Length: 131
Image (cartoon, rainbow, N blue to C red; front, side, top):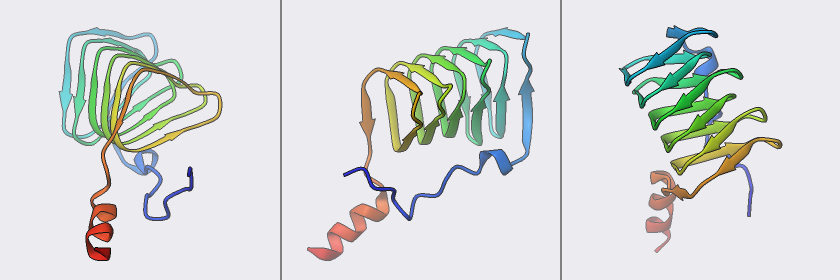
């Protein structure tokens, strides 16, 4: 029932170049929008939308919705998360609804909300070919 999908790759955000960093101790009030990977170790009050990806550090806090291609959550999100790929690490907390295609939650992570998962296109193609 909960087998790892061999086709689903682990997120490679940690290997990608991070073009934007919001360091610990910084607070931003307002929306953040961008195209590349962002790492947040501070506090953001507002929605975060990025095409490249999001890494939320252990001390990072987002109070608002997140929309991105892929996200790794070590910190805390109070809001809805929409991502194609999502990992919630053992220190991560998500209080809000999740909409994703792939989800990985480590033992110890906290998640409170509704979950909506879309089928991967490759899985749908296999079913159609079998019929």
